[in-house]
Image (cartoon, rainbow, N blue to C red):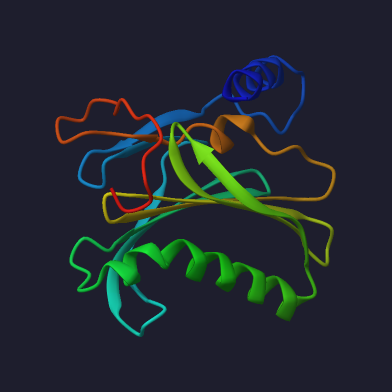
Length: 186
């Protein structure tokens, strides 16, 4: 399945579409242990989130734009969570928040299901918004860190596959992890 996505991404890279920018970069954050393709440098904001059980956890949000399309990566650090249930429930909680927001704003969830990115289990949502723009969300959890990728594109423009399939986890040395079927909290 992943090979098919890479083939599609390769084809789209060579398509003559104005929405496909030439200045995409492979962004690395060694502290948060991930890399991802972004349309240029991102702005970074440190914040906190409130969890399912009202705990407050640090998060870092990365934002980048490609014309009218926006891309966001959010990393929530649950490594200091007091209970395993807090960590394991983080994917469901984040997914529920996106579903609720779509419902409140009149959007429609058009895909809602389990996903695996590089052996890391998670959840994926696709939402058609009231203005017919589309939002794609990927939520994955590894070793106490919740990774949320969100891309929003205007009606009629394609999502850059460079972003959607590019999440890669890094080890403590900054090298790509060799992962095979990781359980949610490992």
